[in-house]
Length: 132
Image 1 (cartoon, rainbow, N blue to C red):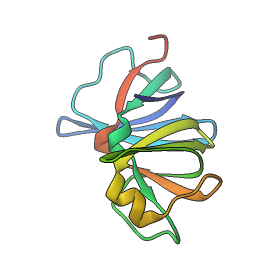
Image 2 (tube, rainbow, N blue to C red):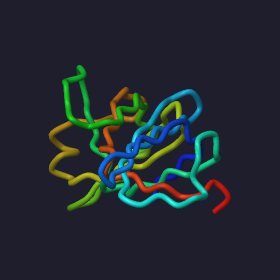
Image 3 (cartoon, rainbow, N blue to C red):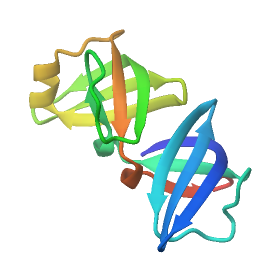
Image 4 (spheres, one colour):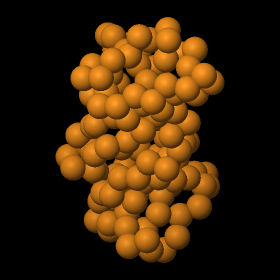
């Protein structure tokens, strides 16, 4: 599980949906949630959680996507399997891991030290209290 700690900056509530902005080391990440407890308020410390399988790895020039979160990264480790490949990444928010199909890995021709972009949609990130 990928995890970043940050500061909740903004909550926009509309028709039962919460659009949340969290700042992690100067980078703003966004997520959507249906429920938000009283413990979450602007300027509170929070944790952002998302699965390795929810990270899309983009190589090459940036294309416009619907992903709300784009993190420039450097590949710092690769563990290739016959079905899945684990890509260790370093971003300004901290380390994260992407789990992609080995077919995708072979198509992308990723190498250690290469710059990539990690994409995560706002719907794939969970919010937790910062002290958990």
